[in-house]
Length: 475
Image (cartoon, rainbow, N blue to C red):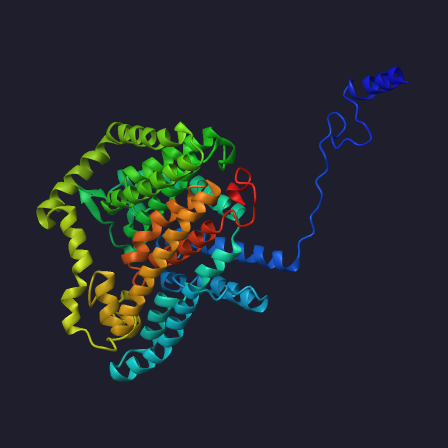
């Protein structure tokens, strides 16, 4: 009996055949994938994710449409993202997918509601143009609920797609900024809205703007892809969005966009991202000691630095001259940071309790009110918000402080839970924009700020949907 069983076993399993209870497919055939029937709620969630990605890609390529493709419609294209945000709000309300009423969300929505009677009073007391008030409200609050919806409806696979696709898109954008760097300021490729020339760094070299209408927005794009790149390198190989060859190509593209940016802010942005990456690496190492995690960042910095001063030597020399000139005019970078942090104190004596009007200090608001995009009130965010909104502006600024602290605390917890560096790296990237960035002034910065708040919230929820840390890196 035993001999016959052994013989049967050799015949059916020793030659690669499948037994009745085996789950493996016959030789040369792949197992058929089971079609998972999506629930209605999951279908809606996926539509919300698709709409969010449309907003994200419009954020990056809307500037190219405005300055090169449809320059005569550039004012209308500014609002091209808004219908998709409205669609997300409609779907969220209709399908009971509005964000949970957490304290941070309650306060944000309370400020949103309070802003309506404030605008009404400002229109009477300060003769604020209604269109300026509406535009100002949009810049302050239109995307605030969207951030929390993204935070609850995005999953790890959606964030992985965000990282992957952003780094791939960086490759053609790198070719574009290299062409801009090598072209004259008055060339078509460097033209901006209204046919104006690009900003110069030094010796006729432009400050590249990529697909955006302003170089400051390009700085945010560069900071974001640096964040995504460092995330990809710090992840275990099997958890990376793509293989090492594509990752190396993406690394070269990110370095190119960084090197020819011509912006000092991009160095500050990169330093903050590196700080977040270092914090993530230390947390991951404490939870799961791997020497490679601690060696990756120094190796990337060393390799990137060497390539910057050799391959992009002309960009490096121009940037050195720009820094020397800036220090001669403004002093050390620390002086500039100090002035940005304390500038609001100079406007406090002249600020009114109600403010001059929401949106009154923005170029878009000025254009709607007077037909001329006059930059007024103040250059830094805090000063302008206080002048526009008075005491309400102070409350709005403190809300952003609270939001940033909340994101940082949850990001540290998320990295510990999942061993995924993305949460802390993302908040390191967008943190300075939340803190003092011109979210309520410039449209692209506004979009980047609130979208990435949503991505941060979603990243901080990684691991909530999966038990196994190794498999739950993107769960």
